Length: 225
Ligand SMILES: Nc1ncnc2c1ncn2[C@@H]1O[C@H](COP(=O)(O)OP(=O)(O)O)[C@@H](O)[C@H]1O
Ligand SMILES: [Mg+2]
Image 1 (cartoon, rainbow, N blue to C red):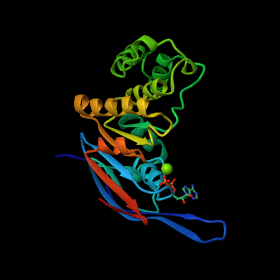
Image 2: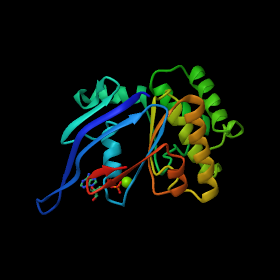
Image 3: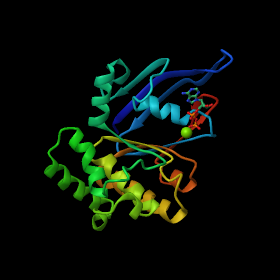
């Protein structure tokens, strides 16, 4: 068993209007295993998204350490963190954030091209990824011509484009009905089993919790399992 991501004693407070500080994370330590689905649960406002953002280098903790293998990400400068994220991490959000004026294929290719990959190579990779999410016959469709579940599958294909080692997902099925959610859950399991991908998922969805290898509960700024 390999640890891919480890955080130690993460603290985070937010300043409230009345000058008072609200401590959201009170010393969180966690190890995430490679090739597993770890699920974070907890009440609304418990700090799940805050923790996910800090683990993914999108936000900084007040104190504490986040390490991917040997990289201490909060020691990197802003440019280095962006580069690290682009090369190693994938993101899936509740809303797909696809570009409406571009096709499914283009939505997957554009981030690769921004990262410096030649269009032909990017498009070939995007087509392979559309096959992985079983949407190869929708490559020319714009987001508005796809169902909600299909849009989210394109967003998942896009998240896979840079070959990430770990995927962070914040309520990835929060906007979908039961049938479409079930398709996404099966897809996440397939990606774990076939590509040994690691997932760290925040969710309220019981069915999504059920595919987790591990459930982490956040409560009062700390975690229990
Ligand atoms: N940028 C911010 N500034 C001030 N307060 C914030 C900020 N981000 C989150 N919070 C507060 O921190 C708490 C935890 O938020 P969040 O991590 O989004 O919770 P969850 O994802 O578990 O619902 C909430 O009370 C929220 O209002
Ligand atoms: Mg949240």
